[in-house]
Image (tube, rainbow, N blue to C red; front, side):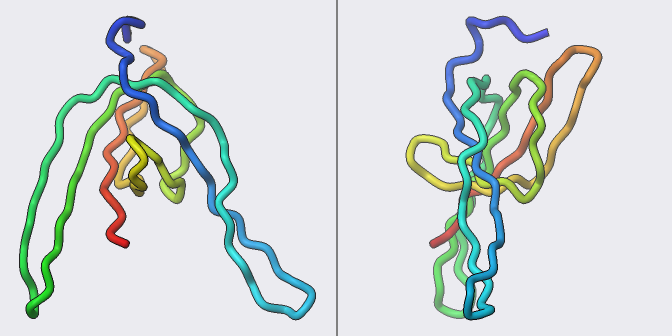
Length: 105
């Protein structure tokens, strides 16, 4: 069970929807789904270099009350975009733990 006092971080969830225009080209857009408050559990940061290019990965883990989340959703946390890596659902406790990774743009 999650206590309300621990839900201090605000997450915004967006789904990716694909539409087809009149010309036949497919276009993807992000559609706002909902906002939720979560408890931040831990983070992992890694900076590496491959072929002269620097990669910065940041993985975060959150616990929140159960919501319908897909692994294709985009999460916005502190004005940064993240993708969902894994979802662990605990329905008896009405909570879930999600692991997200920063999108390198």
